[in-house]
Length: 98
Image 1: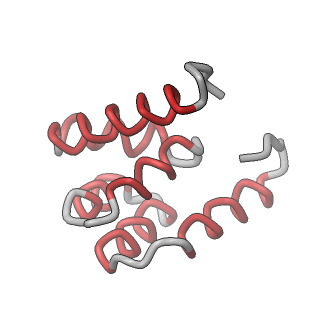
Image 2: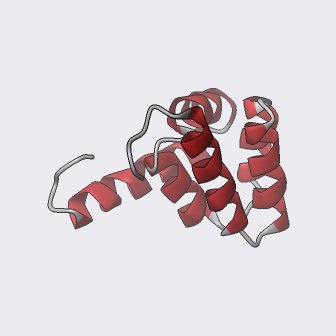
């Protein structure tokens, strides 16, 4: 994701990510996260079949802290899945975090 201080660019990145999701639970979860209800979004992400895409959204940093923290407390197994996916992504880039 490009780094920018412009909130409009950040908002556009969130919406672009949301458009790539096809699973209804993930779409609804993303809508809740975008609306500011991270706990409800994390609950819905736990039901989705698109866990890799959700991890990708977390890695792109637009929802990292909010979703990870909520998942850690509300859905520990999902949280562990996210951590594994993030570690795999970093390893695929040669061990260099963005």
